[in-house]
Amino acid sequence: MDGLDQPVSIQTYQVLRDKLQLLYPAVVNLKPYTAQLAINTAIVNAVNKQLREQGYPQNPMTDVTAHYELKTNERSVLSLSLWNYAFSGGAHGLTIQNSLTFNTETGKAYALQDLFKPGSDYVGKLSAIIQAELKTRDIPLLVEFKSIRPNQDFYIADKALVIYFQVYELAAYVYGFLYFPISVYAIQDIIAEDGPLGKMLY
Image 1: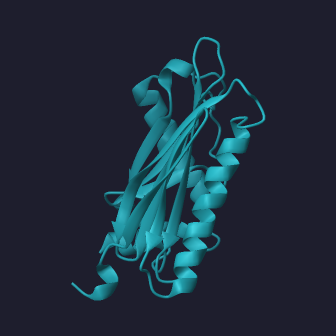
Image 2: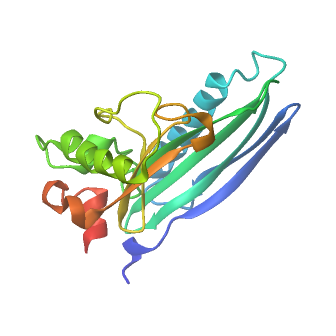
Image 3: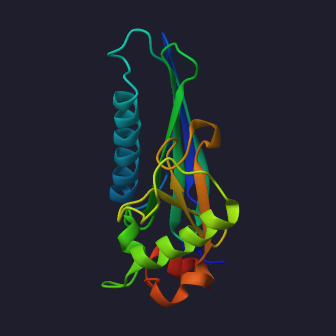
């Protein structure tokens, strides 16, 4: 196993304030330092954006708990999910999840379109797979599913691209997040070989 295939080191930081319990990750001891800085800046920005979206600290009633999950940490790919649960009274709180996927050699953050060959109809192909899966799973939808967004939420885990939808984005609260794991082999023909999914193929 060459050095580049080693997972990067992750440190967890904790922020405890009134009505806030926050755990977030940072990459440590990564060379080059510019890659480490880019990754950590993107993570902090995403964590802060979630807090703002959930109304913390603007709404004094809002109580927030936030944590993260690592999805992939190998082959120069780091993919993780940031979770943020906010409760402001009422029947139940709301959780949002945002995922970030990086090239750990450069610090580049990948958008969904970056995973595929330029010009490939990745939206159409992924939407068709999800459409079929929705029928199979027979989930009652709040809105008719026509297509994913070009920047739909995703992470990479276990040789799969996992596309997901926020709570309420497609279905009622009780269904929570809807996840659609798509094997890299099912979309092999449109994957960008030098992108993070390409690295999972071999």
